[in-house]
Amino acid sequence: MNKKNSSGSIWKHRLAVLVVGSAMLCALPSCVPVMMASGAVSGSMAATDRRTLGAQTEDKIILLKGENTASNLVGGKGHVNVTSFNRKVLLTGEVQNEAMKQAVGNAIAQIENVEAVVNELVIAAPSSLTSRSSDTLITGKVAASFVDDKQLFSQSLKTVTERGTVYLMGRVTEQEGNRAARVASGVSGVQRVVKVFDYISDQELQRLSTLSAPRNTDSNSTGAGDEQYAQ
Image 1 (cartoon, rainbow, N blue to C red):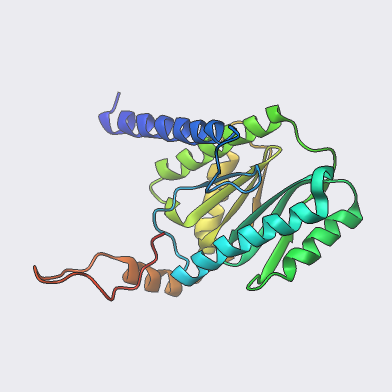
Image 2 (cartoon, one colour):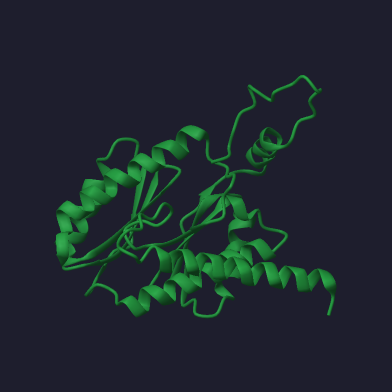
């Protein structure tokens, strides 16, 4: 076996195990998930991403407010997952009726700094633990596949899985988005792929790449003043 391919497969397997293991630990009562919203299976390998630091901070605030808003409106009558990326909110999960779906979407849209709401809530009973565990596994495999694909900048991608449907978020070019969707659709267990991307031009990608690239500094430099895109 090619040594390079073998190393990639080992890393891919370890990453999938790490994501699944983290989700299982977060099922414990004492665990407070950091990257998962209200039971949503959300994977982000982003040690760095293409959002500004301000957008990253606002996404965290939007997430907290969104979860609280959804909980107050739905209570025990549904299961709503809130994911915010670059001020765009994705709603997934199950609610009791169309009126509740619209009420949640409208309320989330009123939260400060929310620029768009993608309402993918379905009218159905809350998903089972088995279904959510399967979604966790799928998210791990998709995330690992992105890392394994050398033509994708995996740090710019965020994955949310609900009932076998994979939602892809991130700031990407159209070419990157199409490739990510193809890679995700090839993962076992994935039933459907939905692109929820914020598209950027090749020129914007070049600008972001220049800003995030390591800079040469002398021995007395602290690196202060560089624009940061890392979380």
